[in-house]
Length: 355
Ligand SMILES: Nc1ncnc2c1ncn2[C@@H]1O[C@H](COP(=O)(O)OP(=O)(O)O)[C@@H](O)[C@H]1O
Ligand SMILES: [Mg+2]
Image (cartoon, rainbow, N blue to C red; front, side, top):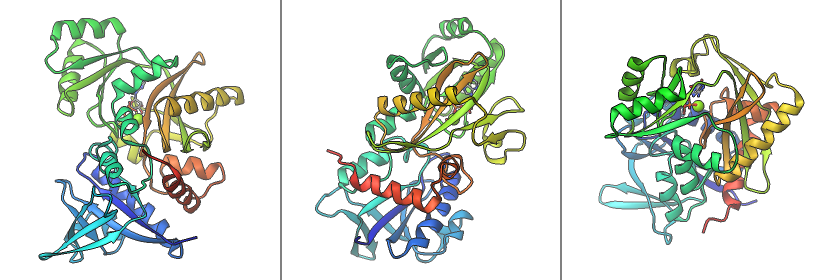
């Protein structure tokens, strides 16, 4: 097979910049083990959106000191399909590096939300993961829930609030759902800007906090139960699933701190559910993946209530990707190690036909 040049995008103009640095370091370390298959081009994006080609050590990405490295040269990705690759600005000259595929290891805004995918689609360069529309849909919790509900799948009762909506009506509608409630920026990740609220006062503060991140806010009823994660890989109809995992919470909810420290929460892999329920959850996750037009990969998160009802929570189209992260762990548990997972993702990217 021809050696492929893969552009790996890391960092990003997003509140999840650091998470991306950790994910990218793991992806790069594993791709670098496969030098006979891949030439890697590292492309870093700073918090304020500057793009650089980076040729230093992967460790410096993890440590967040990469952008000070002398190898950094300004670059841009060409949307011009006559130049499928990276344009490096060297003084007043430019250098062109063709790319066979791009792996955007970016989380959240400007990376996972369809904006980057739009640029990549324009460029005509195959890329890992969901397309523009699917990424944008999955990023917006209100739109994703609406579409999943329309597909006949259960979601927690919720309302959507847009900045400028009358407060009195919002509070009345939210109270009707019943406390406790979760208040979330529609487009968030890593639990940033999310609060669990128990009364009207906390609700108002929660809405304000969520509005700092997004003009659209989702308020939904607390689901008493477990969280299940389903790792889906591939392009429809050739989908495979990892082992399902389960989050056991000791504290209030899986907040930002807990996600990365796991100090009180624990992850059970495989999930401790009976095989029939696991089968039902698998089928539901695959239906959601297809309903939202996902391709390449996604982690579909569900709730399982105490009475055995499965409900949709959200889809992460670029889930955490460190060797310890949930998605790669779920794949490993199903027999697919990290290097093989990366091979499959690159293959799915190259095979996917995007019009
Ligand atoms: N309706 C809900 N019922 C129970 N827990 C919830 C609910 N919504 C969110 N949570 C908790 O908050 C966490 C983060 O919410 P989520 O919607 O998954 O946002 P993020 O995109 O930040 O991961 C979840 O993992 C879960 O622990
Ligand atoms: Mg989540």
